[in-house]
Amino acid sequence: MKQHALAIVVTLAVCSAAVAEHASIDLKVYQLDPVSRTIKGQSSAQADEEPPQGGINPRPVLKVKAREPLILEFFYTNTFPHGEIKDVSVRYFVARVDKVGQKQPPNLENGTVTQGKFDLNFKLGTRVGAKVRFTIVKPGVYLLKVQSEKTKSDHEHFSAIDLQVE
Image (cartoon, rainbow, N blue to C red):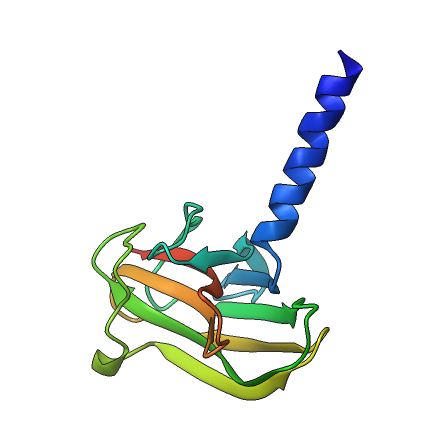
């Protein structure tokens, strides 16, 4: 009986390592109290990958109020052990979407709440991150996402959180 349990644990460990083979992404969003500026809520997400569109894991949802101060914070670490990947981009954005859990990507040309992009060469252990304070003025659903681009792979890595703004 112990052998079966061990085989399951080993299989899970191998599967988990395969999913996070190229990137470790730690994404957090903090909801601040507008008066005291202390953290009153938060959500976090880890790495996922596309395809399939929208990833495999369901996104966490954080409910916030319009005009409430928010902070996004992320660290993206390259864990690809097979050499340097040149001309990679790491993009982050907050953009309006139609619904929670939406798989279709938002149109970033029609406006974002905030966005940024880092262009770099990835060596094993390369780490990039940002801490950005922002507010969302209009109620609705917004996607907070950090994603890799141009990795010359059959998939890209990302981490995402849905913000439900009332």
